[in-house]
Image 1 (cartoon, rainbow over the protein chains, first blue to last red):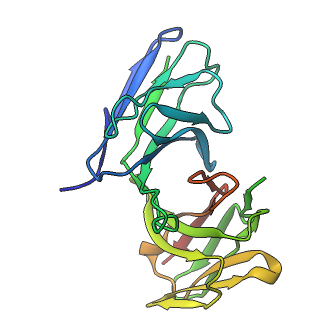
Image 2 (image 1 turned 180 degrees about the horizontal axis):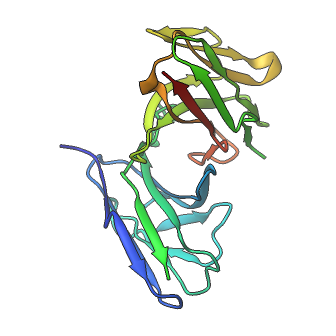
Length: 116
Length: 116
């Protein structure tokens, strides 16, 4: 079945360690996104990528890094520079053709990261 | 810059009441797209509806209806005869066609609780 897979669902790390969250999609979508959600708050855009080997910072990119070496994959690394990394992270994808611009984004099930 | 405001942080109603979730947006583009998503306790975002800026027709889908008014930059969502299963966090989102192609910005969400 087509979809977006985020792994793992729960992740625990010690403070000061970098951690990479996985996001894979088999929908053949060009655009991919990472959002952060804190308890009781909305989704804030971390990074997004419109095509392979290209990505742009979102509203809260500091302390995060991404890569887009393959169309299917958009991993997010939470670095030790991120002051408050404990949050729920959601990955999404979307087609970006001329006739697809109004298409909704499809979301993965999320990764809940806890840093202790 | 694009912005989405959901002023209602939490709403609580008794089952079978009607409830309206407000969404106000800001954009400089003349072509843009609006979305509503539902986030149940599981965390995954469920797509509900999309609307492009050229289509101001209101839409009804079962107990759900959406009112898009460009004159007031609003895209409100009404649930008629609410049910306990409607309890969730609801997000409104905006995507511009030209200024920031493919970037999707979400509001802060409205937590809806339906009491039996």
